[in-house]
Image 1 (cartoon, rainbow, N blue to C red):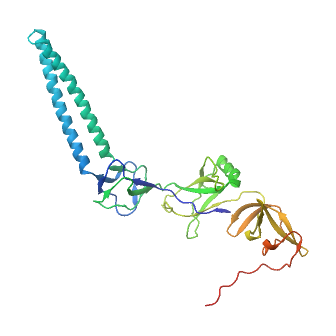
Image 2 (cartoon, rainbow, N blue to C red; image 1 turned 135 degrees about the horizontal axis):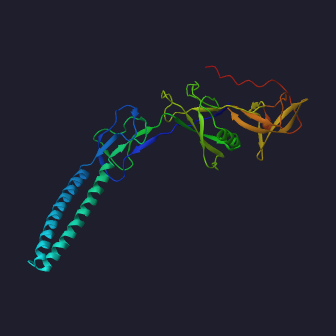
Length: 328
């Protein structure tokens, strides 16, 4: 098993809209609970925005009334103009007033739409089904641009992001191309209390590029979570089942010596230490997997390796026990 430590389960935060300053008027319950997509859970109000909305709606009503009057005048003058009862200039002015009234109605509708858009930003809807957290602000609190209002997270399935070493990329590519079934135990999660999550995960995707600073590639694994046992932000360890046909050897990591980017260990043979180049695998706690360079039965020097050189005489003994804690 290859543990990959400390992935974190993701969530999405709700941020107040940067277009307005408002007063919170309604929020979800004070405890974490289920939420449904496209349902409103957070609302803020701004008296100035509502006053502007009412004023623009009133302006639209006035413009519409003026348009109706201009339309009636234009229709009446056209009938009179047929009998040459009015001057042509009067009819032209009436038609121009009608056209201006139409433009005023269009401008008033645009103003109403703009104000309504800002007003709609004060109502935030859940982007997906999941769990909404405890409200970060109380009713009546002034909220500003980038104020955190609440957080909502998906919970079934739950995604886990892990960083894999670039040496493991070919293996994960094979997993991704072959696919994993729901009943497979290729990926398992170890919870913070040490228990193993009962439902195995599946490899969802691999990131596009390796991080040059860490030499790792991000992989995303999804776990079914029908009982909401996994929570967003939880820290866990991911175990990847080793499917190679051969067995792997583990040695203490302190026995490894690095020189110019290559790794060596010292083997004990007839009272002397001989340097041996090795190929390393994944580090597991205080041990590391050795993929090549030594064979089962070799005696590896674990203590004092920094003072050794090739073919130096050594004294072979049992591994040194950890120092006991001083008595109080």
